[in-house]
Length: 357
Image 1 (tube, rainbow, N blue to C red):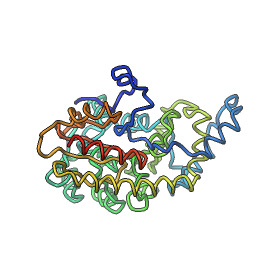
Image 2 (cartoon, rainbow, N blue to C red):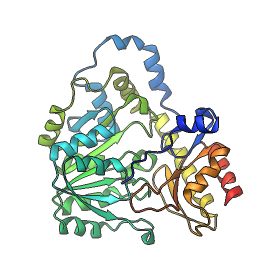
Image 3 (tube, helix red, strand yellow):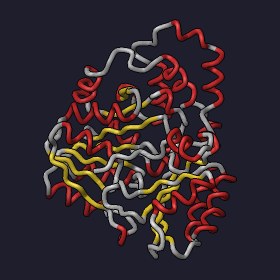
Image 4 (cartoon, helix red, strand yellow):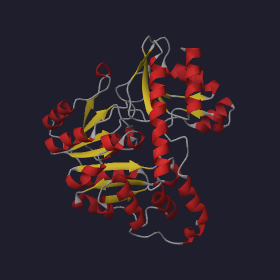
């Protein structure tokens, strides 16, 4: 398994002589419009709070998350980023056998291997456009008697997404814990695709979210998990550090989860830009483009006239970076992924691809 989380702008800047700020990083899944201005203004105007300890219970932050996710605030656990919660949950339940949908984010497999968990991969396939039949997946989980299923929803990098209804079918028909990573769900219609409201009635569900991608705040390291299973929730909390969320992250979370103007504005733009980019990429005769509900689109070079790595290298002098997807299990050197940036940047990408493809 190759571990690769995208472009290193510092290395590329040194190699090509560009400032890292000049690059259009289509390999990064972070909202290019920045974070909530209300949250930033609050921090600026209340900077003296850094001299105060955070609320040990994070009551206001949990209240904001509860309202945002439409779940009971008692079912919330906080972490310094989604990755910490992935690790904490797996460490708590210590699964013996886990089903991992592939291709997927490499961190899941890394954490499972730390606990000598048997990993059974369920591959979504190109010939099905990476779409997954829910009943077929349920049968696979039960056939292998797994005690954990990990689902990235929307899936990175394929963009396939289970609906809330389909997720409930999985929950109702398996005995396994279901860990759902919703890192990218806010880029789509959460009323249809988010599982957060299901947490209050399903003891075998753990939903993870972070603020790095949609809220464009990777620097504050704020993640949260939703779980109705009190035993597991308490064990996770017992192993987390006191005050594990710094006061800046806590304050920003309190504000940005309630900033409906920012949330709706970003969601509207991304829905339109995803539609534009999908249609524009589909116009290339030598590309196969996969439908996505995330803020990224997976493509395959059909005629194999150029590899994704070669395409990436030819785009870098244009100050464009795309994601070569050969490091994802189940994909080869002809797959690449592009993320949504600002409208003018997305159009520049398409025009640049026309010059090469």
